[in-house]
Length: 316
Image (cartoon, rainbow, N blue to C red; front, side, top):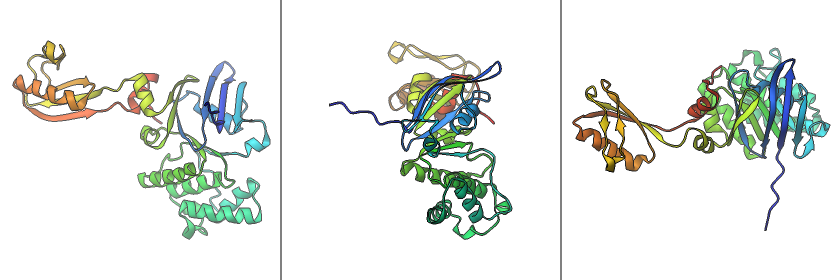
């Protein structure tokens, strides 16, 4: 028996956009599924901002198609399914939390009972019930981010676009914001976010799309991206008690390999199976007469994947 695949919440096909001679998007395609948390990464100038602007309806692509739950993006009803929260705080500083939420709710077409219900939900969701009547201009950056996020979802969108949702906030506020996003995801909201924090992308997303020079260069879970790009070997570093006099060479039965650079107090190599190969490596070093002061094992991460695929460090 075959089953039809569910219609993606968001589907992008061959999206292209140019500004004069600059090709910002060169045929971008990917899907976003219901309840999925997708992190969108790329070095500066990769095309992330242009893509977000196209999806938010702030600019039109030159070519390609966007579908929301199977409906063409040009549909007014489809546009109502999207919530967009820009990187810049977009609040009225001289209004209270309640007044800001009411204003954005009315902007999204909410009236009377629906507006009251969503307002009550937003105050509870942000944890700001007790600050409902305080001016947001006096709030910390993290609190303003929470209000800003709530304003962007007052209409209950099925898809939420976030541009750097935790920029400039403290670690505690970052945790609170991602707890809020997790609650949305559980209820079926699909989330696409851009971030410069690779740890956020790795720990807080179900899937990662990497954009470079206007093209998608990787799409998958962190495990899939690691396996396809840098491999799953662990980097092992052994700090020894004195400088290495010559490379440590393993015999044929030990893998016919050599480790270490003469004159250094560290031996570094890559191994496939830590539980089986690390004890053998330690024993080999000890048999050559060296004491081991420290052992470090580094697993491949999204940082290694990103650097391998783009050649850039991801930074603001």
